[in-house]
Each structure stands twice: as C-alpha cells, then as structure tokens.
Length: 189
Image: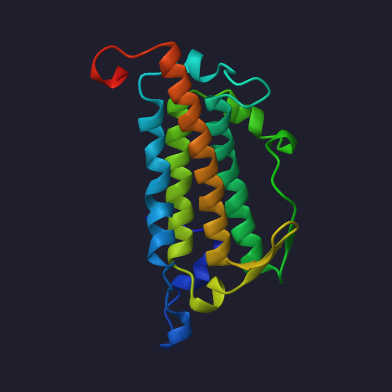
C-alpha cells in the first residue's frame, strides 16, 4: 500500500467504533468507472505511432496525444481538489484549463506509453485516497464556478464524465488516423 498523504492518515488511526468513521464506498457505477475507464486508452491507441498520435488531424482541435496528456495532467489537479475539499470549508474551484496549467507542456512532452503509465499510477493514488474516506468526508463539498456546490461522489462523477468526453474524442481521432494509415490484417476492417 502506498503511503497516504497526511490529510488522510487520520482515517487509518484506530479508535472507538463510530459508524460515521467507517470508510464509505463510492456508488458502484462510479467506482467501476473510476477503476476501469482509463484502462481503455491503450485499446484506442493500439497500432498508432507516437508521431501520428501527435498529428493534429482535426484543424483547431487537440491531437489524440494532447487529449491523453490533458487527462493525465488533470489527475494531480483532481487529487489537490479532493485535498482542499477535505481540509477547507466549501472551497471554490475555477474550471481547469490545460492551457493555463504550467505542468501541461511537460505532459505533452511524454510518450503515449509514459502518459498511460503515469495515468495508471495517479489513478491508483486517487482510488486509494478515496477508499478510506468516511461518510462525513464523502459528504464534504467543493464549489465549482460553473456547476455549483458538489459533494465528493458528485465530484468523482464529474471527473469520470469529463474523462469519458475526452475518451470519445480520442477514439474518434484514433479511428480517423487508422483510416488514413490502416493496420494490416483483421483490425483494419
């Protein structure tokens, strides 16, 4: 088990039984998406070179590689938002903009394989951190400037839906790239 951040350590301190201090799981559909949705990315990108993934096939839109880099760069931001929701009273968050994130160019510089490895590692940390939260902690709220006040399960749903939106864009771009440079054999059909 990875070492949890200090703000989550108190969740692991044994004490008298208190039903409100037991970990509260996310609703199963949210947990399933959090656990597995990101695992589809290698399938979408299969057979496409890093060079082609970086090509801007749709004018004015991010490449498939930039889409993956965005998803990867947002995970640490999401972890920080969880931390703030747990430590602050209804913190306010602006919409995330990769263009304003000083870390984003570093993610774009990575290969697709490196991005997916980092995404898997960061996702494991998110899941581990969420898995120890109590009901009271899960009900803590953060205020998104566009979507209002949301509890942690709703924030996780928002995170998953945002990711799904980019998965669709990545799949669409990947399929366009494969039409331009088809794979040999049955996968080309």
